[in-house]
Structures are given as C-alpha cells and as structure tokens.
Image (tube, rainbow, N blue to C red; front, top):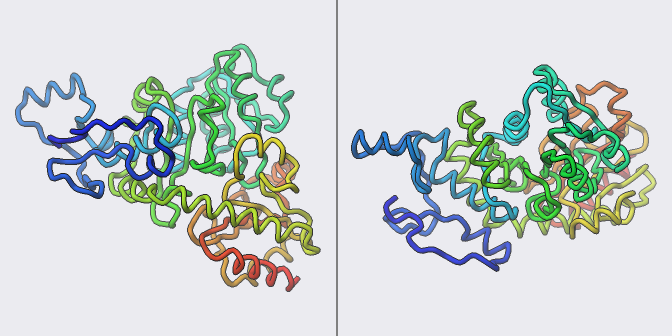
Length: 402
C-alpha cells in the first residue's frame, strides 16, 4: 500500500457520524472509495533483508501475518477506537475471545479479581472456571452496591471486571465510582460494554482501562458475522493485549473486519432508532396486567433510572419483561408472536426475543438464577429496525393470549 494514509486528516472535532464513515481509512495506490478488503493471511517482502527488518521493527503501515494484523482489520480497529474515545483497539474473533483475551493478558496466578455477580454465563465461566483453575482469586459482588465494591477491593486487587449494563437483568452500575475505587489501589478496570452499545458508551469518560465489545451485536447488527473488540490505551493494546492474542490466535478474520467496518457507517442511525423503539415499547407495556415488570435502563420504571440517565442518553436496544405465570405462560407468549424472532442473539436489525432461564443462562444453578433475578417469566426483548407500532401491536396481541 504505497499510498496508505497519503493525506493526513485533522479529525479533531469530528462528530460521531462523520467518524463512523471516514475514520481510519487506509487507501491503496488505486485510490478506492470503499474500504478495501485485503483477504490475505501473509505479506511479501522485496528482499530477505527487508523481511528481517520488518520482524525487527514493524512500521505503522507494515504487516507480517493476519494473526498479528491486517490493513482491513486495522481500519476497523482505528474506527472503533476513535468512536470509543480510546487510543487504540484490537479486533478479536468473537466477543468472548475479546473478554478472554483482555482478562488472560492482564492476569497471572495469585492475582485477585473483583467482579460484579450479574454477568453473561460465558463471562462467569471464564472467571470462575478458567481463571480460577489457573490460580486467580475471584470475588463476586452485587454490582449495584458500592459498599460491596469497597469491601471487596483490596490493596492487592489486580483487576475489576463488570458489565456496564448486565445481560440479561439490565442492572446498571455506577461505572465512574467503581473505576475510582479500583484505581485507588492501582487495579485495572475492564468493562463489558455490549448492552450499553458503542453509541451510548461512557466507558472512556468514566475511566475504564479497557472497554470490551461483542461486535457481533450492534456493530454488525445484521446477523452475519462474529466479532469482538478491545479498546484501551496504546500501551495496553499494543503491549500485553496484542502479545497474548497474536500468539494464541484470537484475531479477527479480514473478511469479518471488512463486513463490520462497513456496518459502522450506519451504526449511529441504527442504534439510535432501536433505542427510541425500546423506550416506546417500555412505555407501551409498562403496567400491562399480564406482566410483573418492565425493565429498560432509561425508563422511569427501572429501579436505577436516575443513575442510568446520569450516565447515558439512552439505555441501549434491549429491555426485559417478566411475564406472569412463569415458564408456561412465557412460552405461550413467545409462540404467539408474529414479528419477533425467537433466538439467543440481540442487537440485530430483526427484533428478537429470548428466554434466558432455558437458553443463554440455563446452565446456571437455580440458586444463582434466583440471586441474579433470572426468573422463569423473564423475556429479553431486543428491538430491531421494524416499525415501532407494528412491534408494540405484536407484543400486545401475544400478551392478550395469556
């Protein structure tokens, strides 16, 4: 790429939608308009001396092997880092590869980790089974209780992990307060930001050292590709994070990077519409006689509404409802829906409903489900890009069958 970044642009002051279209572009000598897909795993050197030099000192626009980096993947990383407000980013094969990579790269045997208890099942598995097996001490706390964080964080705590908005219970954590507590003992803060969305993220502003995403969700947002991203300081990303991921094989494929890079051009438009729909649905269903509760972070019925509103302008694209009558009524409701798709993903262009107790979190012991608030009547509702009135009518019609 002889002309890569031949024209330096001053991106200072660019607003989100402009960054999502233009940030991080690397053009080849052909001057293509759309970002190029470099579907190659390796790179060629003019001489043996040039190969030796590249392995000794890798330049900004030089690459060795796709597991280490690729021009298309690098554009995706640059764009995500700019959107998030961090210096750098590393693209991973999936969201869980990103979570695993961030934690494994920063921890060693004997370290102490404090984490919120309300986590996605695979995140709990990495903490308790994988890290625990290798001698990392894990303390789980009620993430909404700052006193619990204060009591659990010790002078020797190495890392704090949490979901800014928990999946699927939608608990909201005071991220700035937790970051302050962690940094007081020099602990790193890793936040899983998937439910918050990249558009409404406040991780960098709150002081999180690393912000982790499943880009499968909102970034791709159309049910096509797996992906993950770790955003943070250049020292962390190009230091321990890159070293761990390039040697253990968790890097993203160039094709998936290209698909999701192009998806970013519409990310702000899609997510804002989905969040608007989510709030409208929460308003429409709040107080419905077939429901015990409706939960959406920035809806007035949410118990942490004030905190959620103080941290972000919207609560994401997902809400939960608790159907009266437990699993049997829940299944009847789900099966009566016409527009919503029953699946275990979220943040898609298509609206999706999930029954966490029997799918994504079914392996958790009942006692743990009870502690987290994953009831037999809970349904995770992910709002897509359909007309909000159609979605509300579909939900109400299905609830009327109960």
